[in-house]
Length: 253
Ligand SMILES: [Zn+2]
Image (cartoon, rainbow, N blue to C red; front, side, top):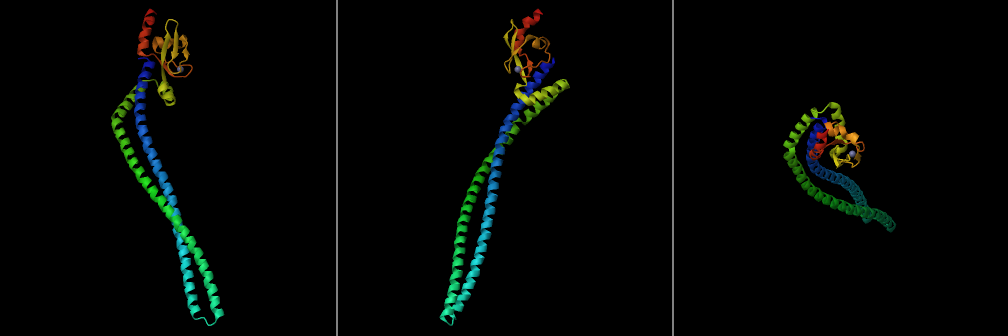
């Protein structure tokens, strides 16, 4: 078997392998998207929880301050009851009114904070709902990925073993070049020679459609010599049908 035939054999197995892996790849990508979505929800949630914690601490501060003012006002009220003169009474009243104004301000702030906290809690509840919905999808996605993998695992291993065997049969330097080509071009690492007009020696590359001068492909046509398209660099081969079509010419030689 010539080197081109060996490469073609390997190329076909590799194509099947890539096909199988891409089926698994799409299931994996879908699962990955769900995981990403969940972690983005978790990040948002952590941010909101931190906000809520800050609000709660601030509210506790306001409440402490209000209690302190309440205690002060209670003391002053007691003193007012015991006031001896009108002037003394008025002085206490002014003091109380100042504290009361301070307290009202704190109360307004505390109420604003409570409204903000309620809004944050609402957002957290919404996120919680979104997260559990997304978790459901994630579960399904993980199940599908596992199922896909189970379906193809045996075939995948068979193909991998076959590929390794076929690759070992290709000269190392050729294999190195071909592997690079496979990595870069996948399904276009090899291309069939297309016969446009056999009598006039008109051939084109099946990948890039550029014409192939006869002297550049004659070695491949006669003996399967390793030949690459000058334009797109794919490894050229002759399909069975084309081989048949070429046979009379070869027999004449
Ligand atoms: Zn080409």
